[in-house]
Length: 388
Ligand SMILES: C[S@@+](CC[C@H](N)C(=O)[O-])C[C@H]1O[C@@H](n2cnc3c(N)ncnc32)[C@H](O)[C@@H]1O
Ligand code: SF4
Ligand code: SF4
Image (cartoon, rainbow, N blue to C red; front, side):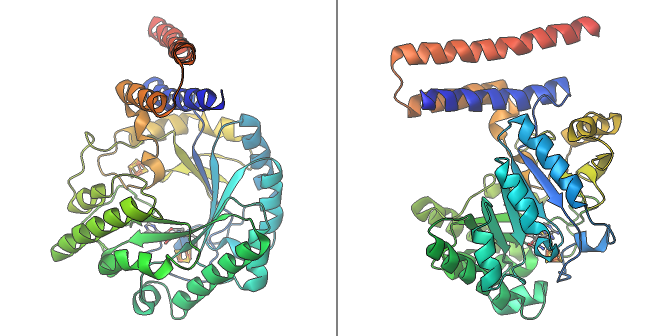
């Protein structure tokens, strides 16, 4: 029974993203809500544009709690990613995590690790977080510290060690992850990062390509700093081969999408036939309280509910622009490729059905419910057509 409910739930979520796009309205809630409590940071990494903007803003604790209340009321299976800036600079970070976790929210924090000593690791592991990600931009001290700053590599590795030791001690705790930003400076070390972390207690490694400019995420100019081009593309291809082979045999690496898309991305060859941003899949809340997706601001949670922000005129406009993005950034905006088409959604349902050994009765009950879910959109579509 549980398996049948899971199958249907995924099918309904896929439909909600698909029809949100078709009908151009937020039927689906985001899968990911990124929150930057502040852009204050302990570092000024070379590739990071975040710390240069919205410098003097701090998202008030009460505003975040109000957003958490609203999100938990949605009953939508989403993940809140607390990013920044450096989230552990906030004195109330554990109060906020606790508040969200008690409301059943899945929360992740991504950190540079600079403030995670043993006592901090103890609090993180016991906090109710779902995932703690440490950024690692090289397999060597030289590369990581060049991108970030002197001493950053050892601090990141120490943070991972403290977290892993605490998790072992407490017997439970958040998943420990590593995030790596793919760029020219570290392209030759991407695979070696696996060797570095695989025995440290890291459970998940996520690679994502560099964004040239956080203000203009669709900027993919090959002349930009950090961009991978020329001979480095051959190097990237070899790294992808090695990482994919490792992932197939050992797990650990989680691909947000087919890693060969990274190559197309840096070559500037991705088209909308192979790649598509679903603007309903994610949103960002800045330290100023503004909701933004791909740079466009469309409502402020200091004065409005999230639901209101997602339904402003500006939100509709922003999503329209995103829907036609020709220069994908390959971040989490392409998080639910199954929902790109109805045939993809059907294939995914069939795959799920085949994976589980349902008997004939269960199968027909499931398909009947799936068709009913699909039919409910037919009604909305007819209403829309009648209006236009
Ligand atoms: C902005 S940081 C904030 C959290 C924390 N300070 C850290 O470094 O992990 C979140 C993630 O974005 C990544 N990042 C920074 N600049 C980026 C860029 N230009 N393109 C893509 N990712 C970037 C960082 O490496 C990090 O994994
Ligand atoms: S540590 Fe994170 S937020 Fe700070 S500058 Fe580096 S990437 Fe940006
Ligand atoms: S893929 Fe989506 S988030 Fe990324 S640049 Fe395009 S519209 Fe923006």
